[in-house]
Amino acid sequence: MKLGPYTLSNNLVLSPMVGITDRPFRQLCKEMGAAMTVSEMTPSDPTLREHPRTKLRLDYKGETGIRSVQIVGTEPEQMAYAAQLNEESGAQIIDINMGCPAKKVCSVAAGSALLRDEPRVQAILNAIVSAVNIPVTLKFRTGWDPENKNATTIANIAEQAGITALALHGRTRECKYKGHAEYDTIKAVKQSVNIPVFANGDITSPEKARFVLEYTHADGLLIGRGAQGRPWIFREIQHFLSTGKQLPPMPLSEVRTISIRHISSLHNFYGSKMGVKIARKHIGWYCQYLSPLLLPEVKKSFQLNEPLCQLNAINDIFDLAQTIEKVQTKAA
Image (cartoon, rainbow, N blue to C red):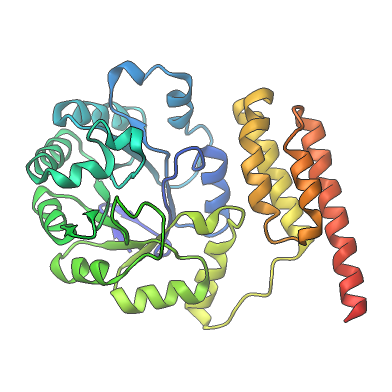
């Protein structure tokens, strides 16, 4: 499928997630089959542009594939200028965040809070599309709350403004990540516009991916939490959609290799102190599919503060996991 001048190898995209879709994770997901990845949201507020974390979010060194950068804010001119700066820095697509449900984002009328102000949405989209020469996409939610769903209205405003593609999460802001995503609104949005629509929310398996595509008729899928600790989900989904067959489960040896490489890249990217801290959540996600007997060892690894100690702990955990797997196989 195409997004402006860019042709995607498939219709699976890694969703932007704050604190997660940094350069190491984006690159890994691309290797695991994601056709495109989107950066963590970056603030359009000029007072935050020089913050070390903001600079890291905009670090694309050595990154392959299409560079899509998500921006967040409330002021049309400020966001348009931020989009221009990102284009000058190498962004190939600008993605606009109108979906974040976090209190600190919504409290300043950004993220999904913008869905309550349709004229401002229109002003922001018009300003950004006019300011850059690259495709602009929009990620949003079904509405502010279940009683006020306006996704089709927002989608039509976006299409008229010249937005290239939409990504819709099947929850309102009030729902945050509770309950289950609904896909009727995504289906309605797809029927109401003539630009690509990506479905997002609770896509955690190849079977669910196929169901969502068939039910909503969406052009593609945006996968977020389903890729946490399982970046190979893109490979699994693509294989299932192409063949109708499941790939065999990822061998523990390969999970170990992927997790070690990912954690090492986090250490290198962020530096020892911050890298070890950020790696902890990823270790937990990689280990979530292992035997519950290993939970104490996983928790112990969270207390370590040195990169080498953390890597050794991961190796020890997988050594135990493979031993447990062998015992269980013999017992069966």
